[in-house]
Length: 323
Ligand SMILES: NC(=O)c1ccc[n+]([C@@H]2O[C@H](COP(=O)([O-])OP(=O)(O)OC[C@H]3O[C@@H](n4cnc5c(N)ncnc54)[C@H](OP(=O)(O)O)[C@@H]3O)[C@@H](O)[C@H]2O)c1
Image (tube, rainbow, N blue to C red; front, side):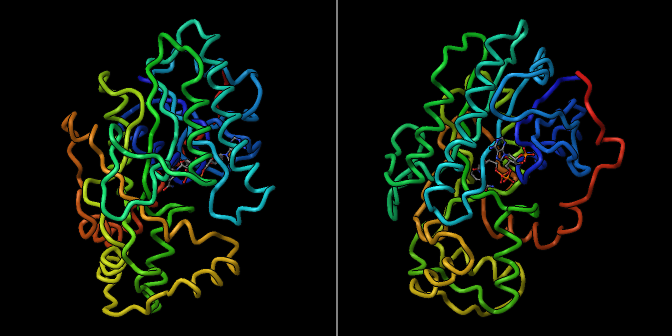
């Protein structure tokens, strides 16, 4: 049985991966700060995300580590939140690197969350791992620091992959899809801003499959765009959302309205208005096959399979891990 350790695995993407790999008979261990985590898929193990401790024993002999830690960016970017967004990504990354260096049997591969938002606002030019141009501003600075921390140590026995993931469409808490679907059902699912901005996205099933693919394929290292091959304009994306929930019309949201709504909802318009045009050059070069290359099928699947996407695997899956 192969062992996978997921740091920050209690969240949306962590649970997508925990379900995927548990179904494949992997042993899945979840590093969490929560002393009483709710029942979820995987074996919870406490850490603080900052310092070495007894949790490091769980890494010994693991085949792969995936680190997904990070405070949600869905908040106002005031100084305190900015610091937490940065620290919650850098500290867990650094302490995992320290832990790996002390192991007798380090993992073959370590995948760290990163983000496709590292690329510049681009309306016309696709951004791949080789030629994509990095942007500037707060979110990009976070992404740069995050990747720099991930690659700063010399880990000779562990292959590293930074997952530059785009918006993952799924049913979990913290996924944007249920929110957009709800807005569309209320007849409010029109374009956001000009609607010209590109939307990069990936279905949760393909996210999990791409992570497994990157674990298996020893040729993959460095940065990896984890995103579907067919990004699209926001106006078209919102039309696809309306189609999935079968509401034929949707009121558009003009920029001033979005600014007010973002302030009221304690979030930032950058999350919806930045043009994200990432493409998965490396995955395609390595012949990864997407189950959901096009958004209509991806959204159709999510609209049809809502209960199944959340189905727990059974109580036997969640139990405490003793190192
Ligand atoms: N969802 C997406 O579409 C998407 C796209 C691109 C990139 N990403 C990145 O992928 C990662 C996972 O995303 P997600 O949607 O699964 O996020 P999520 O649901 O918010 O989960 C993040 C996890 O990080 C842990 N965490 C938060 N602050 C921490 C800290 N200070 N120290 C240690 N752990 C901390 C939490 O675990 P505990 O509270 O249990 O410790 C939580 O389960 C994030 O870094 C996110 O930026 C997500």
